[in-house]
Length: 359
Image (tube, rainbow, N blue to C red):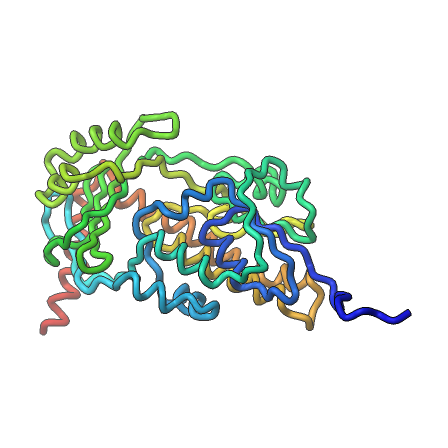
């Protein structure tokens, strides 16, 4: 029997990605379309156009360079040079804070969609039962509410609620360099950072009993204006100017996971290690997860199961540690009792370092 020209000469491995956010789109862009048949399932396609700003550290930018998205991302943002840590009332505690590249989330999503191969199908549908997906590998990139996480490790199926709510927004103007940074107070956190000329990102966190979700941004904003009533002028002016595009969410985290892979199910990004935003690592680790996973799937020297276990061994300890550390920083930043002692310690340590550099 003679084979025709259109006969497939290789068997494509079928990969279903649940979630078309940062992790899901990065993985779709990183996988070789000649080797994999990729379908991305996204329930809320309108979310690609919304969101504030994200911090990207060098490792994530190197990953974006691998898929051809770094130039567009860097062109859409900037890396702040001036930043400081302040008390909530505006007393400077430490300066010279290292900052990641700040980029609007919609710009990052646009860059990822632009480099994803046309063969990677995006299906706008909600997946309620990942076990019914017809695929060799089901990748949960479905965030902190992940359904796939429960298939990887059933005791970790439910997300973890924190006592904090967050506001996030953008200002269509610049702010003076001498107010940029984070402001820590008793049960209060505020941050403000330039994204690019004419665009500034701001965020707040505070303890709140508001709920259930979805939270009303107007209600959370009203509560925040009262909670931050004695804060530094930049805090109050920002909250006063907050517009209708302000978003409000409760902060949730993912439970500890002993594994990222089980049978044909695997989790990456927030589905695997959703953390509080204090280390600016959420988007970074989602990108790195996806790039390194694609590298493992492309390998041919070891069996697929062993390659995925080796990938898990590299990514799990680091990301789970980051999840724990970010939560610790969040609790320190929003410390209620003992915040004055914390402020004195920070001022003493970082103030002495600043003086030694000057000398």
